[in-house]
Image (cartoon, rainbow, N blue to C red; front, side):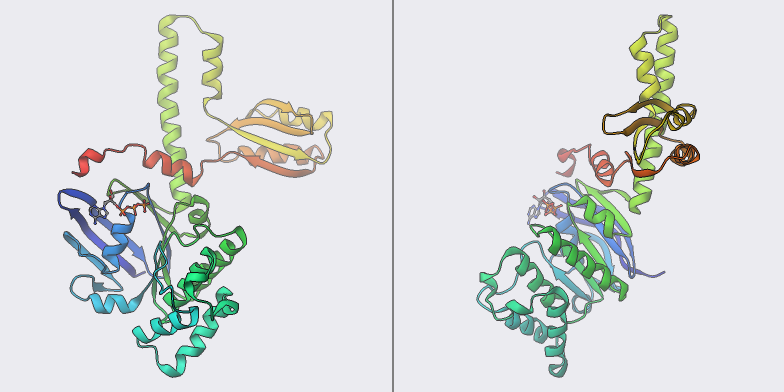
Length: 352
Ligand SMILES: Nc1ncnc2c1ncn2[C@@H]1O[C@H](COP(=O)(O)OP(=O)(O)OP(=O)(O)O)[C@@H](O)[C@H]1O
């Protein structure tokens, strides 16, 4: 698979402050890539370099095979950009802004009205086409911005916090649109602080912290690696604690309990009906620790966090004993956990 974007040691230094430090990134064609990072990490600076708004201090970047420094015009023709702050003319209407963008990118006159019509239909902003952008709500502005950015059919679309401030329904409409554009073969670069959004939409995620790329994988790959890291940390902690205990020659009850629960994850089932045979079936599973039946009939238990089959095994026990599961909940690492871990160490001094 070809890459839509490649960077090699891409660096931006403002005076003596390193905003982006030697970034090496590969974004496959026709994928949705999520760029994450805390405030001030260097996301917008990276996007600005890739969209030819600012010059890198050193390193290279290619977009659609074109070098951002040597062929900025070719790069600009390939991409569309929805920035954090909507950059349309406030005194012009949605229609006028869209036409202006179409003319700027040289969209043939016999196509431009149809394209604008189709896009307005797609994002549902037709009803406000004759309103001035300055009079629109935040969500309407975002939609107008999308129409203007997509009118020249960019192969690569940059979206900087596209759903910030949108209501949940409009947000989901926009997610559908992003997926649709991707299905049509567009590459999408999404900058967002919304972890759920990134998890739902992106094929790959890069986490940038103090100008450095600190993680790059699929969302699931990142979560799995956190689980693996936790397992390794847990094993080290176990060994240390057991050594301490044997040194002290005394096993404190709460310490023992701490060790036992370190590697357990919470799991909870709501069954249609409960009876003793279901309870004893769950209790007799060696992977289950401490079953508790809550007043609302929900089973709360803990299972081995690192055993891939544990959830399946408990389910089999319940179904085998004639139980009907209405809902199930397990606590897994989220992309937010990965983000917090990957960006925990902040050393702004290193950037100067
Ligand atoms: N023109 C500039 N001159 C000096 N420093 C700058 C300039 N633009 C950005 N920076 C600094 O570079 C760093 C990265 O900024 P950038 O806007 O790329 O962060 P970001 O990851 O997009 O943050 P946010 O999530 O808050 O939008 C910040 O510390 C910022 O202050």
